[in-house]
Every structure is written in structure tokens, then in C-alpha cells.
Length: 132
Ligand code: AMP
Image 1 (tube, protein in one colour):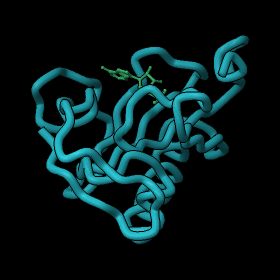
Image 2 (cartoon, rainbow, N blue to C red; image 1 turned 60 degrees about the vertical axis):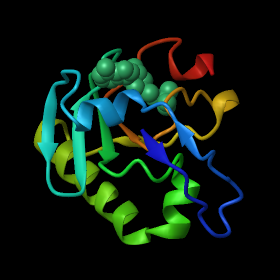
Image 3 (cartoon, rainbow, N blue to C red; image 1 turned 45 degrees about the vertical axis):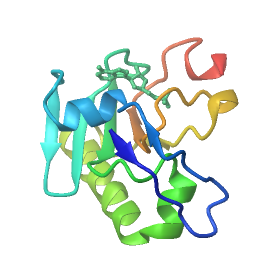
Image 4 (cartoon, helix red, strand yellow; image 1 turned 180 degrees about the vertical axis):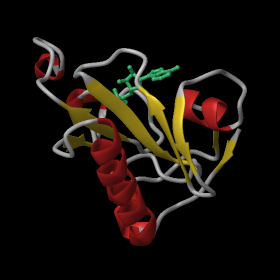
């Protein structure tokens, strides 16, 4: 369960409560995931429906931010830590070159409203990201 927060200047008011997202459940170990990295602030997992040879999700443990805009406004250091984690994972698990995608809003393909970065390495699989 998420309690309501209003992030100043974000343009997104949160409802007073909402169901926990799938990522909150993964962080809480309520459902399993292939965890490839974890520290106090961040967890990274393998995407269950990969769209590239390397497809990881870098997820802040906090559920306070629905999207990257909210996160950047409220906690830029945490956003920078997410990017650094993506850099390290792409170096460890692929060539070091990667796409970093933050879908923002349903019409842009966002389905989980707990900010996360897609780390995509290698050639994108046909007809996936382009579908959105
Ligand atoms: P988005 O559509 O940008 O919100 O990204 C959500 C991503 O979460 C999608 O790429 C899904 O494939 C992925 N996903 C959903 N459920 C799980 C899960 N249980 N484990 C790993 N990845 C998941």
C-alpha cells in the first residue's frame, strides 16, 4: 500500500492510496524476479518480456515516484544512481552500449506506475518498442 504524497512541481498529484505495483511487490519479495543487482536504494531485474538481447529494469526501491519526471524533480541523486547502475550493468552483461528508456504515461507505453528504467542492449526485437 502506498500512502499519498504530493511532489512539489511535478504536475502529478498522487491519490491518497493505491494498490501496490508489481515492482513494489518484487522489492518486498512478495513475488519472485530474476534480481541481477540490489543495494539499499535500487533493485535491478531481468524484464519478463525482453525486447532486446539484454533487457533489464532498474527500479528504485521507493514507490514514491510514478515516473522519471517526478523522480528528477524530487531526488536527482537517486536518478543519477539509477543511470550509474545501468552503465555498470550494461558493461558487465553486454558491450557497454545500451538504450535507456523511461516510458512516461500510458500512451507512451508505461504500464507500471513506479518509475523504472529499461536498459536495452543489442538489437531491439522487431515490433516491440515500436508498438507503442
Ligand atoms: P513499462 O511498460 O515501461 O511500464 O514497463 C514495465 C515492464 O515491466 C515491461 O517491460 C514488462 O515486461 C515488465 N514486467 C512486468 N511484470 C514483470 C515481472 N513480474 N518481472 C519482470 N518484469 C516484469
